[in-house]
Length: 185
Image (cartoon, rainbow, N blue to C red; front, top):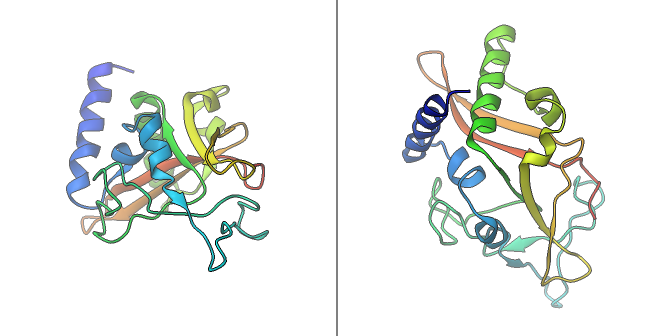
């Protein structure tokens, strides 16, 4: 794909951050430190024990967090809602802009063909074989709460979230990779 086309599309998606869009700001531009900062601090119960995701959550045994840093603001304030920034068990990113642009085009084509909202789809189906290696992500190690483990994206998915526009089009709200549910730790 032409690098100029990729740069222009990412700029368009970045410009949407002033509204509701935040896909590049949270899932393309952050470095490793921003990803681990996004996982905040360990959430604890009233006895001081770490809070964990339950067996039906898709993240069984993983650590819940609070004081999550939004890469859009560099603070715990959510750059979209203005409230506290929240994140699940994983902080993930696309490692290159072309993959984000290709995934956006894939999901837009899917919506155009089907007339339905885009749905979570395997990374391999969206970007081809071996593309799982072009993502970075972390989760907090339940066995050592001060360490972060890398996410294994093999068999993972890309979750797109679009918002309908009054003209019938769609604005990309966010898009991120997820590992296979229940694989970690």
